[in-house]
Image 1 (tube, helix red, strand yellow):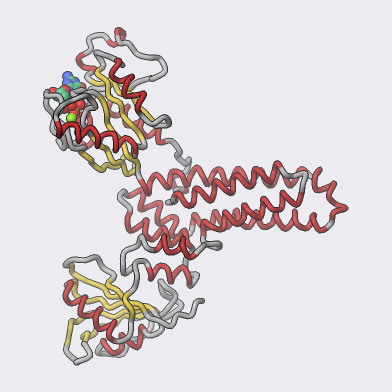
Image 2 (cartoon, protein in one colour):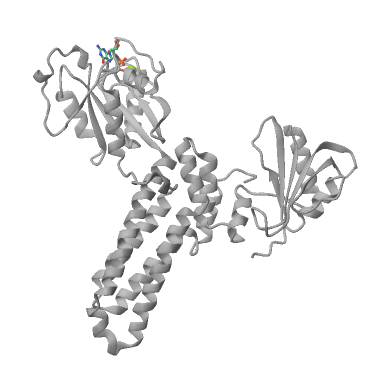
Length: 448
Ligand SMILES: Nc1nc2c(ncn2[C@@H]2O[C@H](COP(=O)(O)OP(=O)(O)O)[C@@H](O)[C@H]2O)c(=O)[nH]1
Ligand SMILES: [Mg+2]
């Protein structure tokens, strides 16, 4: 346990008016401060009804106080929650009282940071707290709670224990060089490292899906003016969000909309058709289209089915980032009398759709989900994850591979396993720099 001398306080409920608003106090003086505000005795792990008074003994509000005695609290310190009426003015007055009585205003995420520093939760669980708060789809929330409840950490810790066991074994054999021959020949070590590798790769796969659930993906619709991009956006959304006309150049500002596809938050962007034009406003729109393409996870390239891929599409294609994910959609298929006459490049396997008449949109959605890939077999296993976790897990993967390659030089192999362990420990925060902690907790809101 850390020994904090200071007590922090903040409004824990969101800004604005509500039925209830909560001021939270955490630290060694929490009880002392609350006793001065509350009108009756406060008992551990019980709630009690009070008048909340200021130092001039004027009543601020009436409400309930909850006392979570350390270590049985979220932060691990003494925590008091003052549940008042949800008026921003009342909550400010209560908070000011706490500060006057010796508390310090909490920094963003500081309650959760204390929970982490007091070993109530590990780093990936702390991150799951913010991910749960910020989740935009039910599936993202579900995967965040899986992480918060420790499922992700348990997996990592299970792996960590196996890795430590292996290191002990390898390092012991270093201390007995006469046994070295056995060490090299012993297929068991290779087998054990390979087993760890498989587990890490499994976790990476699930983590990638978890990252997708957390961050979502940007889907950008591009194509010639009038090809049906705005119609497709509306169809995907199920509402008339973007203006559709028969006039080319209607969409200028990119139109961005959030939707959920199988629980993955998708930001769909309808763009200005890319073309040469002297229209100043349309040109600004076209510049913005290129900017959205840079951040796209997937591009849907709409083509008029009657024309097929023309010199226009080929020109744009040359200018797109090399590794970008493209789905080709041939639109206005309703205007094609005989599909067998279509000119289609065999490598592209486009999806045939009619944005106007809602044909093939389900196939397009399936294709989008397929391109997003990485889907764990067991939905219950999903946990929220971040780039930071995936980076660390990829490092583990790399060091374990090195360890296999270095089996003939046990000291190098031992060092690789050591590095693998360090990288793995970063996920749950056993090895974490102050900078990293600062970065993670600064993403929280105040009061959490
Ligand atoms: N027949 C037919 N017309 C379509 C289809 N999709 C779009 N359109 C029409 O094509 C015109 C341009 O559509 P719009 O969505 O504004 O294209 P954008 O310029 O690419 O955004 C409009 O008149 C639409 O009604 C389709 O699948 N079939
Ligand atoms: Mg448009």
